[in-house]
Image (cartoon, rainbow, N blue to C red; front, top):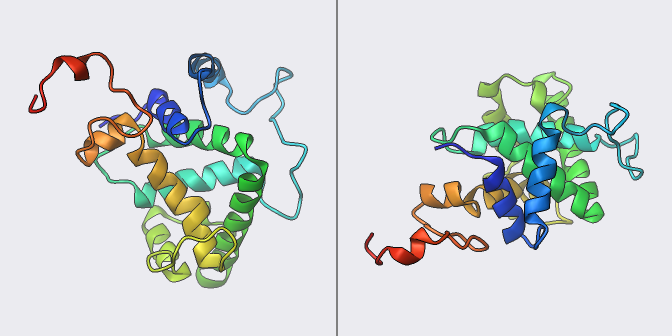
Length: 196
């Protein structure tokens, strides 16, 4: 199954981040395809709230792509484009969430330095990433915005990605939800009967 930018925008709408401006957002996303995250001058965009002691927003997005490679089913393709589209808009829309995600990435990276002798989670070989998430404790941790490192990683990274996937039309079909919350399903869903 192929995840698309439309899936990402549907997930954002389900999260209340995109409203009636979804079509305009899709147009902007398509325009960004040649250079996502760049300003008109061609320089990488960086929020005024970026602080040098925490990973940048761009680093958070790259880490989310790496985490998605662990937590998303192997049956889905197009993960990078989907995660980048969802994550950039999610982080831009909510400065408090952005800061929490940056702190969670810092926590995850600090653990990787100690346990794997690597600088960052996203630098690990793909087969080691699942082990790293397990060692941090994300399998058993309750998601909590202001909790322990494991709880924050679960909340800001793992759960955010799972929400994005399963609230998208493609991700919803993967688990048998034809029309996830926030997705109308289109006219065809009204023409079919309940069994079709």
